[in-house]
Length: 393
Image 1 (cartoon, rainbow, N blue to C red):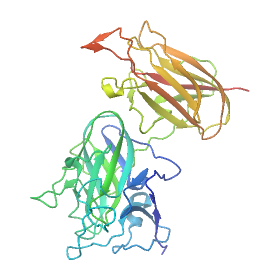
Image 2 (image 1 turned 90 degrees about the vertical axis):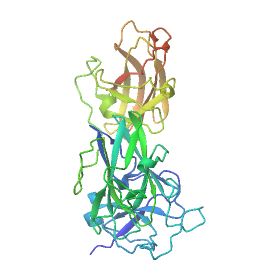
Image 3 (image 1 turned 120 degrees about the vertical axis):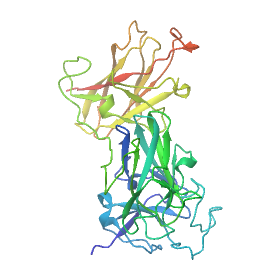
């Protein structure tokens, strides 16, 4: 039998990545499935850490009395909180008080072993959180869930009771009157469309997590490995026809399908009607600040002429920043529009683009004070459709 290994992720509090970068997860039609091993950072891990377990390596010398279960995990990998030194009620429970205690229990969400998963949500609202976990005893079956640094009571204390010694789905919250909880009681409120960070933290050591699902469908009950992960894939840009009517080009980077959100920037949403990315300017915190979308160029390295395609908006003249590998190609401002949603083409010049070069577009929502709306004036939403790349011979 192949020896099992645990790959250590998150020795430090700085972000560490799997597979060379962030896995871009996206909610579609009110649902998103996430592989637990695809977290992008780990913090508060001085006492207990999450370890990624696969089927081919040597485990570190840490207590793990219930063995390993990678063979039956989704995509052959899962995560576990180690060391696991409390497996039953007879063993000493040590509550977390400070980083100097060898705590094996954390009743307060966000105190110990915090993981982050950036997910792009197209739909705001209340989601049910389902965890696929492996429990072998009464003291390895608790977890906390948060969002964007907040740890609401509605998503704390995930609890698994039935289904021991196998991968089991649970959406139950431990409560004083019912320690095993009831289904559909772990709820996460997503406040707005855009990028949000789902966060997990330790409640009990030894917790093993394979994947999790967030769903707006309260009738949905996952079985087996359930849904495949909702990963936003890079799509080969089309050649030949373009949204801007340019007769010759090599690549069309569509803002909706070829670029991805930047964690930490103002969130954006997909304006399906106008086939553009846009900022929800009804949220005051999103005004006069830049959102951003990025991609890593996977196609032919060469010198390219780059054209940015935006849309006019009569209520504001949004600004756009275009850069390649952090080097600015310019700042572009929409002209005053006499009509909404007319395409504007900005020449960003010629630049060399290597394989895996980062191309980024930043954009903002502003007002020109011309169009009354309620007790203030309306804002543009920074709409834009994409980039057009033409190789220079």
